Image 1 (cartoon, rainbow, N blue to C red):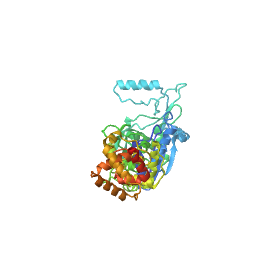
Image 2: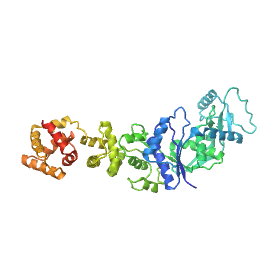
Image 3: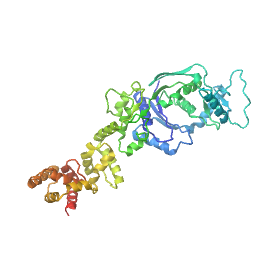
Length: 464
């Protein structure tokens, strides 16, 4: 059997971390088995689905690099096909018309709850042998219900959770078409999985309750039953259900916050799945290793610290041309417009070891390309009359210096010896004058990258 997986988001919001992990696992499983990965947009919730949400999903998939072999398919473009199948089910007797009004169903539910019975449709319009049905009430448009088996069990061997069995008596006859004729979510999913020959459904465990109903409908249609793998939920750092404050935000927000897609993918791959003690790996390695046997059935826990660690790792390993493009883009909100250059590359190389995210990297190197705003506390502490005297001597030696890191460092040592001071007495005020603050990598390297003219100009601004 050819492996065909699908990612089927509803465009009622952004693509969040949970959805991205589902997409990643479905994509990787198809890649591992030389199969196909299908993107399907389940947009039947017309009231809540928006074009903006569709675009957010597509943008998120593109940023993560999760390319699909087919799609995107849109359920709203398949409405007539669904309706044709519903008419066939009515003709075959696997579905029927139900004329219950909302008031009747509300009253039934209230009565069942008072009696301590699980609320469910009681099948009053379900056609049975020797059962007399009332005349359809005038002016009441019917819904279409699936005639669920009323005996036996529906069971499947979940590839994550193990054997699951549900008694059919626990399932009522769900609505597959509303009174206005529009098919419902659960029915559209079944038809799509059938038509698209989906072999493996990998999705969140919030869909477990839908699975027995969908299996029964697939059987009624004479379709092959996919294998199901229901992924556990993701918890926040504090063990609570993942929310916006934990990271349940748009995948694209991770881009905005300075994360590399490689880091996000690597982190998502380890959320509920493992391959020995491997922590850092490429997507090629992940696809070669990925299986459903090593997905934990218990909830995974989001760890922002681990994500930041991975992001720092990928920044260190990132090709320079990509880092320059990302840094240039993130400098623009600071009104700094820098093209790729040897100076930008040198600045990034100096700071990339320190950065946990791309935004931090851009902020760290900004002073190379724009006059920094000095930290007043650092100015007060380090720009003293003694420091001004030392810096006056130092800057005078820079004009005709061979501009190289070694030569700059030699001059610094020379001034320290002449003035009979410790090295920080020169380096700290120099840092403040050049970078605006008291912390930086080796200040001789900073000076070299700034260039002679800018370095002298910034020092002189404090001496005038």
